[in-house]
Amino acid sequence: MLRMLKQRIITAVLLLAVFLPTLILPSIEPFALFTLVLIAAAGWEWARLNGCGPQRALAAGLALAVGLLAFWLSGGVERSWRELWLVVGVLWMIMAAALLYRGVDAYARWPQMLRLWLGLFLIACAWLALVQARLLGLGFLLSVLLLVWVADIAAYFGGKRFGRRKLAPSVSPGKSWEGAFSGLLGVFLLALAWIWATRQGWSAPDHLYAYLWHQGLWYAVPALLGLVAMSVAGDLVESLVKRAAGVKDSSQLLPGHGGMLDRVDALLPVLPLAMMLVTL
Image (cartoon, rainbow, N blue to C red; front, side, top):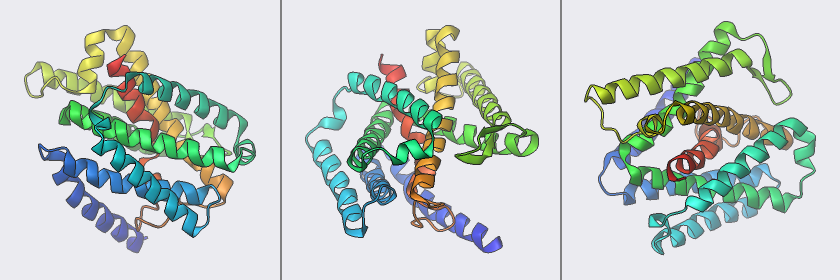
């Protein structure tokens, strides 16, 4: 246990040592390039989880990186993708509902190429949403990242303390409805605190919660509810895919943490949905 904790801490410190400087630099290039490498690793893991051998999986990860790099250099990152966010957001909601309703066996019967290319497409869209969120401002990106992290942390502790009713026992036995509601409460408290700090002049109004609040409660409350629900769904979908592949972690790329997909699974649907909400 202590060795695992040490590995987790060392890996987290090393990642943050690179991630944080690229995040706060005024130029977008270092951040986009670093996250492109991470996304390529996620693409490699996705290919492995969906039946590709070592060489094909490596080729898939490299192809994803090269394709996104070419897209970036051609000016694609700076363009408006409002229609894409709407399509991807709706696709994520329909796909997550269908997968979690039908279960692991149904996913395993999907054609391999459909699973492979659909996953790579959604991973690519998450990278584009991540970079465009950073272009909207550091505050906006941090507000989206913290939504997922706070939901996950609050769900973990809420589930440990109050968890009784299993959320998806056949996919992720450790998750509970009480944990999910704790995550939702944590995010609402985060949003209220951030809005209050903005009104006090302690924070610029460039974050997701300020935008949602400006649209009115009728928009903000369902939007936050949907984002939290999809962060949970993203985690559950990845767990379902791993069960179909018969593995515990997406890889051992990050010692103590598993794989890249294990760390970004909840962000994959939330990032495009956040962009959808602010570009509609």
